[in-house]
Amino acid sequence: MKNKIIVIISSIAIVLSLSTIILQIFVFATDKPDAEDYYRNLVMENLHNFSAPIPDTLTLCGEQVPLDNVFVREALDRELTAITYQHNATFTILKRAFRYFPLIEKYLKECSAPEDLKYLCVAESSLSNVTSPAKAEGFWQFMKNTATSYGLNVSDEYDERYNLEKATKAAVKYLKGSQSRLGSWSLACAAYNCGEQGLRARMKEQGISNYWDLALNTETGRYVYRILAYKVLMQSPKQYGFYLREQDAYQPLEYETVKVDSSITDFYAFSKKIGTTYKMFRAANPELRAKKLTNKNKKTYTLYYPKKESLSYKKLIKKLHKSNSFIDSM
Image 1 (tube, rainbow, N blue to C red):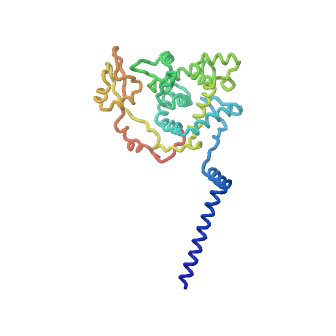
Image 2 (cartoon, rainbow, N blue to C red):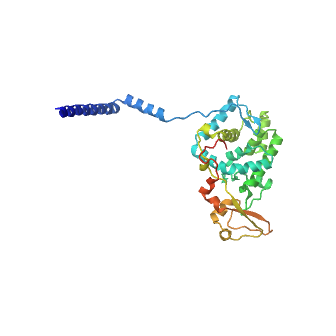
Image 3 (tube, one colour):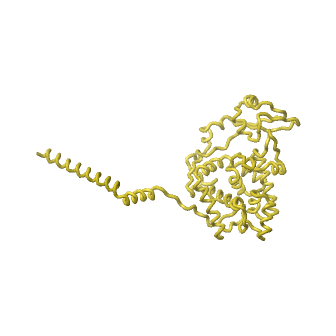
């Protein structure tokens, strides 16, 4: 008798449960407003986007940015929002910065230049050797004529726009000159984008002597704010939702050097001779633009190739003191 009662109770419970499920399915399928509300609430609970916070104060190369000006603030907000929600590109830049910022900072210091100029390099090329539609090339995006006028060697076989040290120092020379003539680093950065002559013409037309009040073409009008946005985000990546461990960043590499004072007719054979691969050799010497190097004047070139231990990820991250910590600033 006891077993029969248990069976009956269990059967009733099952029927009630099934009835409840069927009723919920019916309501969800037939009552469209409730179903839509349920879906909207689900989205609200699981999908979140936040407005990128603007800092209270901000400087560019030691010069105060007038963030109390509504137009300045909104222009910065536009660029900061863009890079905050351009996740794949921004994450890649953060990873590259771990490898390249120490080098760029070193070269800037050697030239007694403001460290903030490294963010101009980010805005120019995303820290990569790229070629623009206008044929500007390298990390600092030099046009050929400008590059040669600032002492860079540019030829079909050897192009120093791709040499990070030499291109950085040439860019500093350009920017320092502009800053001296124009009176501010913000104007010097703007001139780097549109040319000093064109910028001076706009300043004269409008009777304006600062970047913040100057009406410019869209690209140059956004350019300095993009530099600032990268500075803000890269100095506090976690504040903007970018959690990057040191072990996930691209580690600095160590190189062996070889000096040559004669022509090299075949880089494939040369790479093998010095104990590396052609791929690794070209990656270490991006200024080499052909498969050979003509050297009629017997100039001495210093060429690089990665140390073998630099190609081992496990060996690289062993050097990290806190490989699981998140990067606080770039």
